[in-house]
Image 1: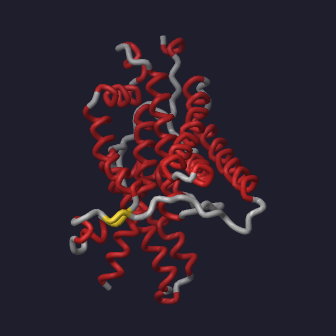
Image 2: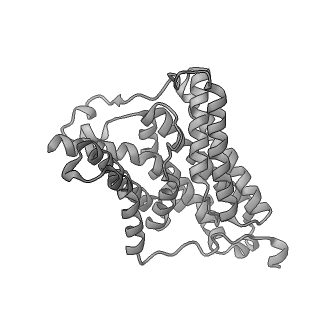
Image 3: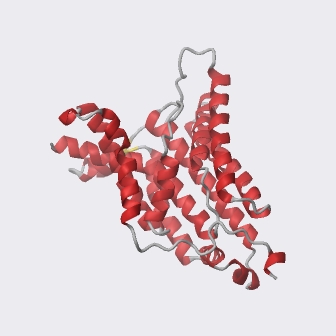
Length: 309
């Protein structure tokens, strides 16, 4: 059983990293008062863009940048609709989610319609860190991943520091709690929400690139597989705190890795469809079990200075 559990924990960390990147970005957006429901579309479009970037440039890093730019572009549109125009954030997010998924499939089909299958692309292969990778148990679990996984690890303390210990983080939290009061104190509410919303899209783009360039090494329809909504659940379960959100993402990553292994092993004769839905069932159960959460006070509430005066 030891190899099974080592593989489970290593796989759980690898599958959690796309969730971590996108959930950290979503934490910033929601703490500023903007809900990005379209994460699924951001990640799908970013995955397609990263594949195209890697294929045509031969560089996985340029593919990553294209993926992050694609996610940021959709988020910028969302910010315009919700911050500038004051439209319903859920409706805007759902519309952009379907737009991102449709554009991604269309672009991939148009680019590779004459191919027998998806082309080989430059990807991020696992990096064995010297000395640390040879440590028993911990080395096998933590130090045999790709570059994007290590980047996602580093984002957790970095973004926690930005949100909790910097002036920009204070302004972000203030805007999400009391926009009118923040405006009175000289904080530009719209600019702060634009920055956080676009940052959420960029981080979702990083997550989509991880799925394409580091985990699957290709693109296929349905690759994101509902992770966008699990990310929103992780933000709520983590009570809008980067460290707690990271823990929630690790839990979901382990559940995802577990259901993959249960499908392959076929233990107890349980149909594989049951294992596929297991992470989503436990996600719902976890949200129902959580009692002490308080969302940002002005989440989903547009702010216009003229109306506030």
